[in-house]
Length: 194
Image 1 (cartoon, rainbow, N blue to C red):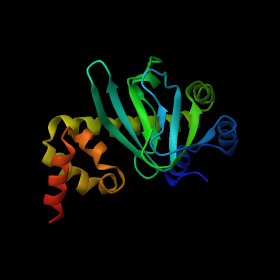
Image 2 (tube, rainbow, N blue to C red):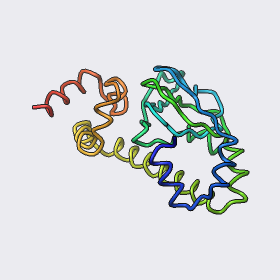
Image 3 (tube, one colour):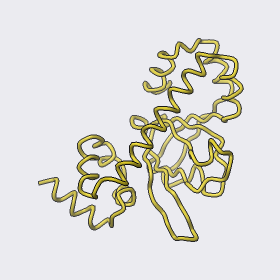
């Protein structure tokens, strides 16, 4: 069964049953254990993923500069479309990882297979364009918040707008995303719990 988000997007684009059948000839379902890297830095990410169940973080990793930073969250009911954007569009090796933070199931589809399908189906192209545009807008919005908000403003934004992140993502990744220590995050959580 497809997640409601995906069904809604497919319906909005009027994707035909025939097109869906063509897509499903090329998709795979993967079970991913907690803390498993779905994509590792240095790989070329030519897959798109839809989170069917579970949760992931996207982390930027630069071993030379010793940087590890969470830059996005993906869950079955929050940002369910994921890939490593730096690699997916350029075809270059990624500097990111997609890491499961819970036992998860993903639907995966190769970029080149999808591109060959959307070249001949305008409704499928409309679906793909809508999903990709939404995902990029969401990612860009997160980056703007990271750059412009103080840690306190960013935490308030997360708890008021996306409480699911606070509820389902381990504190270490939230602190990494916010650019603060886990101890400082613990103080913020305590402050806003009262």
